[in-house]
Image (cartoon, rainbow, N blue to C red; front, side):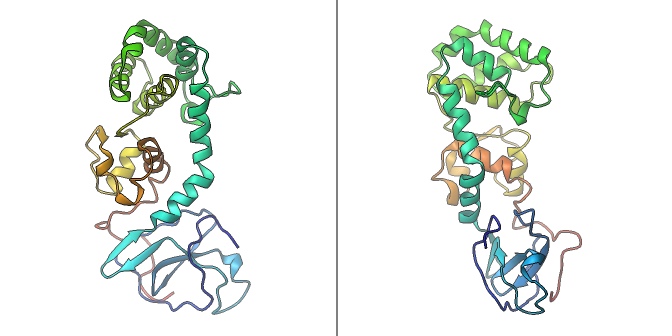
Length: 256
């Protein structure tokens, strides 16, 4: 039975004391926490079916190694590839197919997908803000076309859009990513915004920075593109736990 992030199954787990770190589950359907000899485990109550000591499925998100608790990055990447990467890939593909830079700027600033629906990231975006952003990018068209890297494109777009009401870090990055897809300029760094900065902070990899080099990212995901790493830091930001983080309030501290 697959519950989203199932990396190990067991039928008769041995319950041990919880590791001294706050641990969270990624699967929203998993609502109970247990502690096994291999770290933190989570099981959906329906899997028990009334069995007192034989649990059908255990979802292990973290493994305890000595005094350290490490993320199971393989499970996270697998979940990302299955549940979120298709959306990321489709957005990139859509903007690479734009008929002109004018179209790319319009759809990027108005956050429109190929069905002319607004991307969820920008559901708050007002028509006035989108129009203002489009006008400001049209005014730097030559700078956009002369950009030789995604980073130079990002800086040009950032400078142009900062005065726009409501144009925050995430919006500016998304617009740059979309226009970059049209120009075949792709991120070579991992850019931090309101979402990714939370993830970077949780992993203790530099919340005060504006962007990170790929070498700053946990080695377990360095084989992914910087844009995919940005996606993961943002999507899973509430699931990461720094090794120095205190236990969650109310987390079990003894036998289950």
